Structure formats: structure tokens, C-alpha cells
Image 1 (cartoon, rainbow, N blue to C red):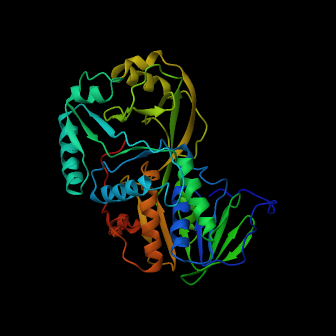
Image 2 (cartoon, helix red, strand yellow):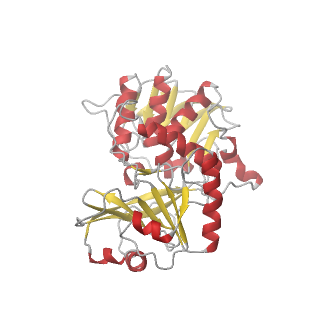
Image 3 (cartoon, rainbow, N blue to C red):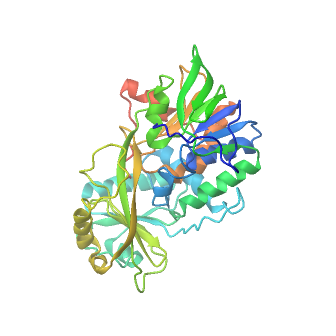
Length: 396
């Protein structure tokens, strides 16, 4: 993590406590969710540190999709649990998040893709999700913007949708503070002290805080935090860009989050226009947060093939953010076996925001010595020592 000299505490901003029971590193959806769940469970002296502003990392740059449409049973469980929490977010923790359960629609062009989604649909149905395979014509009825040319089929999960990431962070942060947690922004972690394998303190740009537990949810910056205590967190930052179109007349109501699986081109409604994104195979790893136009010709080509009517729509705004990728595109969740106590939840490879509520529960339970609602031990960072990756396929 790059240290930013935040200077002394400003009026209205809490000062750094001398000590904490738990220090959470990272103030995105994961950090704020964990702070809320710990404080709600009665954990005292919970301190969250964020080097910039809450949600200013990957969370605020996310497309906002929420789903359980995955090929991995663990991700299905995490997504389903989080969907339940998002549906009740107005009651707990108490915040409007503009949730639109319009569904996720994956457009499929090859026999291999059909087979992949037929199998993942079977797994989702077994977990109680209403996902179903549909025809190209049915897909075009759900998303009239698309051209069904070349499609062999599609997969639709009607319980999924999208919401506003910044509102989710605000809801968790407000409730965490109300329950006694301390959230400090403009405070970068510079080192973690330990005696033997026991954590003793966290050093920051605003001073040192004594603590015996650190929870790393620093997203794309997690590898640097792990290295401070000798824990290998194989997370690589990769820029992804999003644009928002100008208003589109007669935009279909209830338009699902739509993904052309072959090209990774996707869109969903965003106010009177569309939020549009696509992965860039030529993007090089690194902390690149500037917007470029290099990827726009590839986006235009994908639009021309799958949604040609969008070529006549102007672009109003856009931004760049970071994916936090792992070698198998699955998260790292667990507690380090060789450092007491260093917990982590990172490397979500593009599906972190949507799993935030479930991860808050799980890290709370791991900290308290409880059994989480789902076994996350297969997602331990140590899985790469034995070359035992757990690949997620339903990602773009």
C-alpha cells in the first residue's frame, strides 16, 4: 500500500486511538461490512483504517451488479446470502441502496458456453436459485437492445440485479459508527509490528495503534499489507474501465444486467442511460487509474456486433477502477496459519462488491471462533502452495 501523509487529525475527524481489539485495513464494502458485523456482535474497540475516503477504491468504481449466478458452489452461496442482505438493507443496517432486481442475462454463442452455463444453472437451482436457460429469442425479449444474431442460447437469473455501491458503504459505515466502531480516513498503514508470530501494533501515517488482530481487506493493495507480516496474498491490480451513455429515449423498463459472454461487453440501466463496460485483453497489470481511449475501438466493435443501436448514443461520463485478481479468479478468505491473528478477505477478481454482506458475516464468525454459514477453507490463500486452485468460470 502506498503511504500517503495525511497529516494531523482535522476538526471533525476522529483521532487515532492508542489501542484497538481489531484493526481493519481498507474502507470499501468489505471493510465497512466487517466493521458493522463485528460491532453489531458486541466486539469493542473496532478500528477501520482507510488511506483515502470510504469506498474510494474498487467499491466506488464497481458496476454495482449483485448476483448468485456463478459456476462455483461457494460463490453461489456467498452471492445468495448477500442477495438476501441487499434485499433487507433498508431495515438492516438501514440505508436505501437503489436495488433493482431485474436479473442477470448471460448471452452465449458457443456449445462450450452452453454446457458451462447448463452445469452452473443446475448448481444454482440445487441451491434454490431460480436461474434458467432460455432461447436467443427469449433473451431478445428481455433485452430488446441486443441483436440475437449468432447466439445459441442464454442464461437468465431473475433474482439478481444491481444497486449503488456508494450507498452500501454509507449504510454499513453509518451503522458501524452508531454501534461504536471507529472509522478513520486519510490514514495509510505503513507497517505491522509483531513479536514472534503475534501481532502487536499497526503503524500508520498518523501514528501507531496497539492491536493483536489485523483484518486485511485492502483490495488491490492487499499484497503489500500481507507482506508486512510475511503472508503471501497473491493479488494483482488490473484496470477496468466503465462508461455511462447519454440518455436513451424509450429505454426498456426492467432491462436486465446483460453480458455478452464471448466479448465480455455488458450493460445495465443507469438513470436515463446505460452503464457500459468490457474487459480489455491488452490491459497490463498495475495501479493504473487514469482513463484511456485505447479500449474504446474494441468496445465499439462489440457494440456493433451485439447492440448496434448503441453506436448512435453518445457517452456522457466514465471512470477507471481496479480489479483485484488472483491466479484462479477466486477470492482469498481466511486466517493466516503462521501469524496470530491476521485475517484477510481480498482478491475477489471482480465479484467482491456483491459478496460484501456475506463476507462481513464470515469474517465476524472467524474472529469470534464461530462456524460460518458456509465453509470458506477452500478459499484460503495457502491453496496455491499445493497448486490447488478453485477456478470461477462465470466471470467477465
